[in-house]
Length: 359
Image (cartoon, helix red, strand yellow):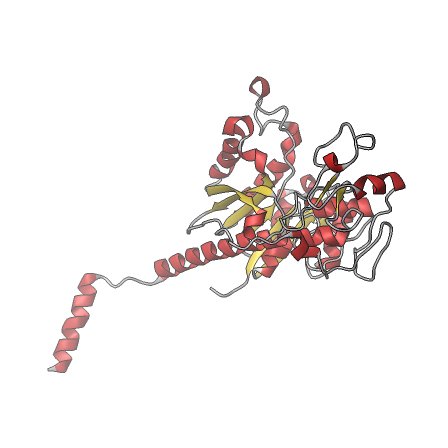
């Protein structure tokens, strides 16, 4: 029961899910990632993992079995891109039939071929309500056809020790055992608690801390952001300078005393609560709960995208710990089944023999 549990990570990205599961004691069998920059980051931080860089659709069922080898796979994890939201549900079209969701089908294919004890699929929260709930039912049904009992829940990262408001859906399948999603934590971490002890930087400055470098803002942008107060928005900017259109989630400052807004692949117009600049990649990585020794590779745009696309490792670890508990209940059940049961007649015979010996 104490042997290390083995996982396969599909669509691994920079490795947020992998890191969380590793922190919970799981052992990586192999991972798959298509994006080269994300793959470079993954290799940098998980040199002991086997990473397949390439299109998952090019991995045949035979190759999957070869990669698996004789190992027993406990869990397949991953967040396949699901993009067909605009078409799915229109004129009778199903989510599963949308060509843009073929990567979701690849996740299902790996689960079908390998038949792990469990799987964990992470994705955008709107998957839960899209097309009046029919889309998520299609997804759940695909896994139920493979013999899995499926649980799903939208988790708020800020309720699980992550200093960020970030809602994502987790879909968990199991063959046996009992699974529950992690309990909500009472303590909420703020932006200042997460990044407040990093060196102060001006626009365009860098530091000796890996990935802690500030982007070089224009004088016009620096003037606009100078008016925005801690937790404020574009309405703090004088009207002649204020942007008249665009995403309302831009031209805001992080509130120092609250969890951050959702970290995405482009945070260039969301400003530090006290310093006149956008956050550095290291600060964004901290809001995602990556440790400072986790180094991101690539140019600044690629790094921001890798960070924004990642599952917060701390949230991943919370889910992984519950997955481990479920696997352990399965193992205890299997052990009970394997213990030979003594029949009543045999037990009575043994009791009579003991009595005879005593006399």
